[in-house]
Amino acid sequence: SLNRTHLKGGESDMVLTGEVTGINRALLRNGKITAKVSIESDMVDCNQLLRAFAAGSEYAEKDTEQRDSIAQVILDDSKELAQLDTSALAILVIPRNIDFELNTKLKKVTFNNLLLDRVSGKIHIHNQSIQLSELLLGSDIGSANLSLAYKTPDTKGANLGMDLKMDRIQIKELISIFPMIDTLAPMLRSFEGVVDCEMTAIAQIDSLWNIILPQTSASCYLKGESLVLMDSETFADIA
Image (cartoon, rainbow, N blue to C red; front, side):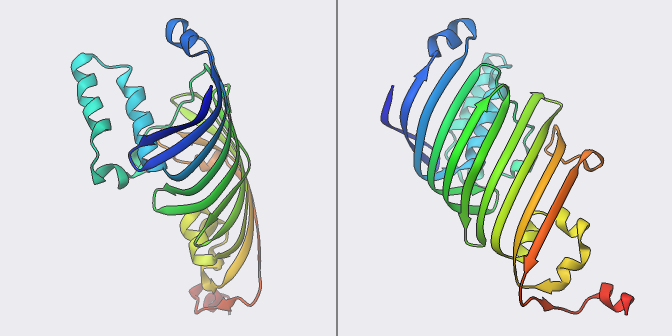
């Protein structure tokens, strides 16, 4: 059992409370590890954690000399980890033998160049999938409610389902986070102001995190008031 167990890795710190079972079975016979854990944190750096997960997967497949080289990269406490471009990582495959139920309460989370705060909700990791249930997200550009399902049967790609609701977000920030919106509604860039956004998507992702557009189904609803229409070549052509 875990009773406010402190973990520190790179820029991330966590306090864990709950139960973990099956560790011996997993180490000796590749059995299942189950966990029901509450996680509290002042900071979680997803950029560093994703690099560590990717390096760990690579570590298991290498010989002794190569393992030592990879271990040194993981232990290197340089700024390179904080500046990681996560888009360069291969897709994350969830192990078959884990079943984790996590309740999160995180003060700050970094992912790429996005800083989130007040992140809370439930995460279930099992059957080679990750399920987020109404995860509440706050940031300096708006607040959001996210439900997501991510499944990786192998390293070739993943299936993704997402339901996202964002409140009072600047249009330019929305487009920077989700460039596909600019493709779906190119005239949106001609406006300035604050909108509410509801987005639902089902997609497949290749091994390098690229969305396979022909196999993507998505819908987006935007609501805004007192938007400002800027000069636009699109509207000039229509006129």
